[in-house]
Image (cartoon, rainbow, N blue to C red):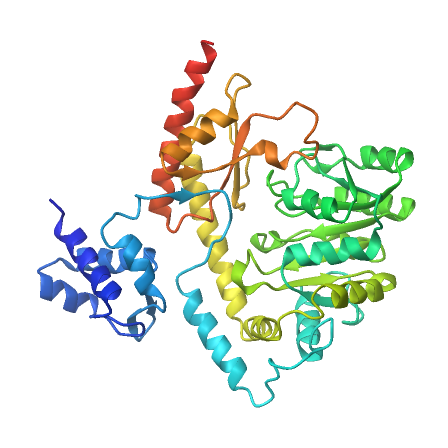
Length: 453
């Protein structure tokens, strides 16, 4: 027998699914709902919180609670089940807050209503002059070493596109790219497509080891280094400033390029000085909005060394000609009106709360993460096969990534045992906690069994 709370949530979700409540319709106030259904005000508040967590409604201060756009599709999934049930995907990070759709819709409408709107026209390969100047101003506001101009800035179609442009600009087939011991898997895919070799550089708890990097550069003709100094994926390591200075010195000394991926730097309120500021003539810097805003925006900013800007422009023309004008201008509007930063601050708070749940659920277990990170690595005992855990989790409706897929050396035969979780993916904290409890139970169940083999 369902509780009255669950019955009312299901009824409202059903009304949204069937169209009785349409996108933009305003729901009753908390007091009206409580009075109509004989609920306490606290229970009515829980109903609205549940609908919000399910992605069906959005609240606006001073105006009320409204049905979200595209909420009817979500209602099909959520109407008859608790948010803690169903598939929970920890394999990819896509933390999109409920209020973002309404913010995005307004930004799109304002952009296309602008009298100077040119989103259906060709633009410069690097992006519209106005957008690039606005982004240059925004980036400079947080940099110690200011950018002299926006000439080296290119608006790309996402982080992977920016990575490919950078490597196309500075590398030729057959050359070698160095990566961290655990790295973003798509780097290897891009290198494979561009016919570039990949080698591993040693690291420690502070990131890449400068001495190892220098030795590698000395004995191997490395053309470029790929790294993530801020909240590295998957280790969550943030490279301290002194280590960055040492890495920058090695890059300058050996005249090697680097691609600095800053996908998760937004999670740090005061990130250390970037490598691109310390070695601007050696470092390509990428700042994607896929994690800080939303993956569907497909906007990433690429800062290239001055001498390489023309090579990036050539690669842009050869690949996509230009990034999507509408998305570039919408991103600019979100940055200039302050909504981007508002969402980023909310995401920082949300990640911090989710990390508290991680610490509570996995208390007593070894966990590799950072209180500000969206990534959690759970190492497993050598006697536990990662494949067993992944399979058992899938049967329990939980998806996770084997840590081995992030290993730089895929041919060593020494694939580490462990899984990586993206805690930004579950739609709400309650769903996440229930899934984390399942993960803990499964690991605890498999570990003693494997020890007896």
